[in-house]
Length: 314
Image 1 (cartoon, rainbow, N blue to C red):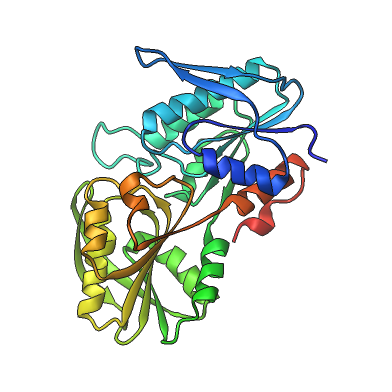
Image 2 (cartoon, rainbow, N blue to C red):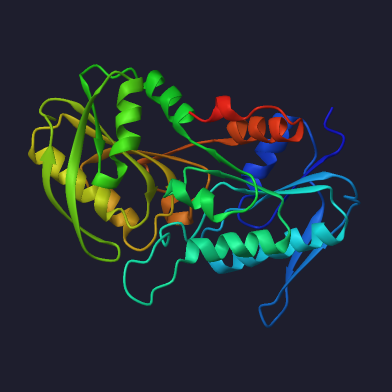
């Protein structure tokens, strides 16, 4: 029985939240998020949550700052309404790429976001495919970190590739993720040696490994401007790859991303619904969206029942 469980969401993940409610067979909590003419946000919880375990679904994706403030204000409202536990569910953790100092006098914004969520009143956090796993250590409350791997693996099994598969890490930072993925599907591992000349600017140098005649799967956690993926696909094609697919958890897809994808050698871009697609991305025939609602729903069920979540950490 989930009688003491309530699930609320802001404006960023309405469809995902409804799918999770469908999996759990519960109703989405009633709340109203309003914006005043000067941009201030007002949240009103329209039902009693006293003594409840409340899960707030909100990705801090574009518009990042508005979605973040919605999340913080909702948590504060629930805390003042005497909720028993407040679990912030962030399918996509915005600002995760600012997880360390990369220059003198620069901020560590991922840590600041963690402090804000804790101060607002969250008692636990559930997120998926963090850009840097050490972000979990920024929190002084329990943190459950899920991966979209089971969903992506299931889709790959349905594809039934006919040629040998090579899993490709688009940069050195993603090697561990790609190695684990390649091991599960019994594929070879390749690495693209990449150099960044500035923010959102990537330059491919060379490829480590053999991709000739193989079905290449580029694996990454975030696709933003798609520069890394499209340049990587070009390099793979030049090195004899038979076909190229890209698998990414978080579809940020900002700036020239869709134009680059349409003009690239990538046959298909598979993403999850941690971030809702914008209109341009939704109209792109190369993009396939997989839902992580069942995975998040099962995690929420186990957290509510004080059961182990570790078997979901694939």
